[in-house]
Length: 219
Length: 219
DNA sequence: GCACTCCGCATTATCGATAATGCTTGACTC
DNA sequence: GAGTCAAGCATTATCGATAATGCGGAGTGC
Image (cartoon, rainbow over all chains, first blue to last red; front, side, top):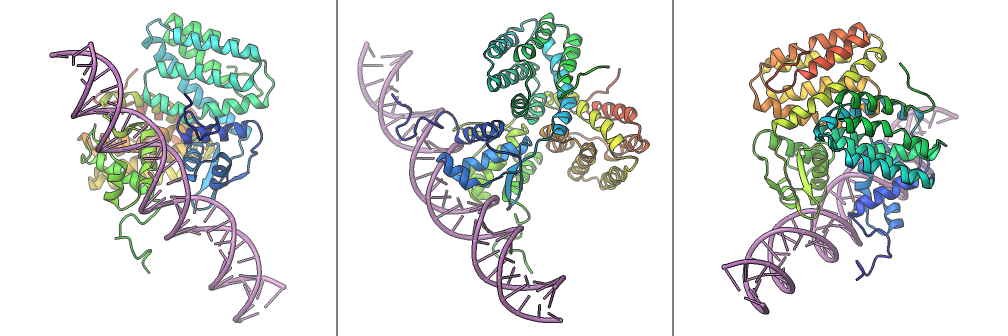
């Protein structure tokens, strides 16, 4: 009962545009596409055996989160993500996740099981040392908190930060201990489980602020 | 020296996708497309004399800001924006613009001329009573502040809120005095001109918080 | 009468081809 | 020799057509 006959076991799950997007992200995260590289729609399409359309949609999405940059009628290239971009994102993300923590603590009414599950998954992955998988697990952890805040505006703003991509890039470029990193999320889970909105807000803001590259948050 | 011969003086400025997007927003803002209405790509395309592709891209963008909702392989419909959506957006927007105010106050180094220009434009428009134009002017005012913060992550998160659309919808549905509304932005301009980061942050947070429909912010 | 299956239709997702744009190069003028 | 203009080329933007998907209704068996 094969899904389809013609596709060579590759690019067969969801929409092609999504798969192309993930492919490009990986290429960048793993250094096969370096900043400044010009991306031609038809070329990528040919590589992946799709047509121009899904590639185009992937470009649009990645441009929206700042991974690519494009000029109308000219072209699209890999944006040079400098440390400043990561630094810029921190206060924004901290503010958003602080709100998320405050709302989630109240709205999930003591049932933080989903968050704890994501935390456990993150710990497991950290043990394997797979940095790419860890980046994904961490993103899912944080996203689940934002989702539990039940505020679509918040979710959209947070998504627009392109956390997943940034986390992958950050993970790929540093040597931080994964287990240690995962462990540092424990206090978030506990704060949420306590149902204390203020504490959750505070813990999340402080946690995310520590993502400043090469520095430690303090007040 | 006409731009093109074939187009009937309509849909001729920028990319078709952008024009389709603006068209749909207007249709919704002016009540010709009501919540729940199913949108068919080919139908809109036929109406506007384009093909399916630009319509599709417009749908994607509007889905991203929450104006439409779509299911893969099924269809896209006008989302029912309820008061809750507007309420949800307020704390997020307040947090983002507070950050923007703090950064902008410092980074523009006393030169708030751009912001003042947008303010003046908003006051002018308010005088005409054109609510749609006012919504646009107000959005431009706020966007200019976010832009002056020189933080792309912030800009992206803010854009994802779809402020323009929400403002249009809010404007279309209430009877607030435009001049009064415009005037309430003066303190923001003054705070920014003073270059005082904390004051700008505070004034913006408080101003945006007042956008809560039917209520007044207090602490 | 009710539940289940299968078929046809409406709609989107993807494709391959064409039109439009803007950069670049090279010739021409002053 | 420097500047200007235009034609060619690379690339995207848009198009029209086809493939794939999923929903709903007709038909069937119990």
